Structure formats: C-alpha cells, structure tokens
Length: 257
Image 1 (cartoon, rainbow, N blue to C red):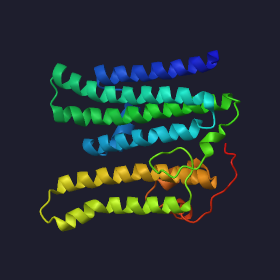
Image 2: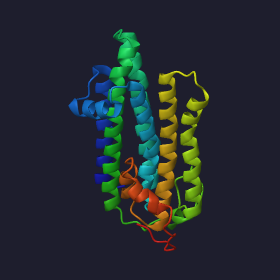
Image 3: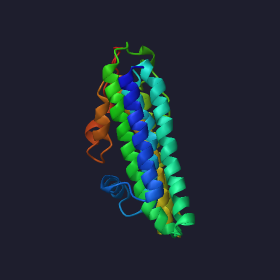
C-alpha cells in the first residue's frame, strides 16, 4: 500500500475518532452533524434510530458496489465497514450511558439528543468512507474481478445478479410482507395506534432493505448503473426505474466496471 493511501486511511480514522469524542464527551459535533441528524430523525428519535439502522443495513451493499471489481480494495472495504459500524454503535450506546449516568440527563432527553447525533455521524462516517474508497479505486489499476458477475438468485445476498423471474417473485413476496401491518390492523380492531405505526415502519424498513438488495442485483444483471438506486429509492419516482426492472432481459456480457 502506498504512502498516499495509508495517509488517506489515517485521516479518515482520526476524523471519525475525533467526531466520536465530540459526541460522547461534549454532546455536540457541529451544526452539520445536527442538521443531518435532524433531517433523518424528523422529530421522532425512535423513527430516527430505525432509519439509522436501515442506512447501516444498506451500507455494505454501497461499499460492495464501489469495490467489488477491485480485489485489493475488498479487504480494506471490510475493515472500514467493521470500523464504521462498530464506532457508530459505540457512540450510540456510550453516549447514552455517559449522559444519563455521569451528567444525570433524563433518559428520554438523552435518546432525543443522541438519536440526532447518532444519525448525523452515521451519514458523515459513511460519506467519508465512500469518498476514500472512490479515490483509492481511481488510483488502483487492478484487473476487475469477474467472479462477482456470477448469477446469484438469493435476494438476501447482494453479490452477483438476479434475472427477471426471481426478481418478480422477490418483489411479490416483499409486497405481501409489507401488507402484513395493514392486514393485522383490519383483523384486530383493538390496537394501539403508536404500536401499529412502529410495527408498520419496522416492516417497511425491512422490506426496503431487501428490495434495495434485489434491485441492485437486477441492475447488475441488465448492466445499468448502480447510481440509479438513488432514484429507485425515492417513493413513486422510483417507479421510473422499478417497473423496467421487471421486464428488461438479462445481458450475457460478463464485463462490468
């Protein structure tokens, strides 16, 4: 590994550790972190935590799509992925402990405050890793790894490709799963509205992650850009991308950049 690459990795690690120090011991990591966190949390720290977990669930897929054609970056990607997730979870747990036990902050207030900060640093850490790997990928001249282009019809596993029929079946199953909260609400007349909303959001988040994985594999199968996932993830607008994925034939060309 070159000195430039080592230097960039150290900068990313030190930056993440410094932000973590500010969150845990200062309770503030700057206006940018707060702005990002407030946007994700949107006034409800429980929903904020859930969206943060969803972002972490699709994080491995994002890094995989960025590095799977470069064997040298795969090992580094896994290490950075583990580092980021471990640091984010540590922030979430330790900051709540310190604020409630050391500074005697009420638990509800601690969750409200650090839910915002956790969401903010999650996006910040992920973006810093993506930028780092994008730079290292451009510096790397290694031959692409063709083993990753094999067909893999398991929607729970984001490596490989998925053809039209397995993708359709996956979407159908996910639609049924997403309908479970509504069916349960109609059957059970006596229900807690808050509990129902939480259950519904939880199910929808799980469905979104699995659908995101399947869409990524389908895009790889028809050789469309993975950047289209950013459009696909937008409600209603994503239909522009989602509907064609059900009909376009697989492409047999095994070269993918």
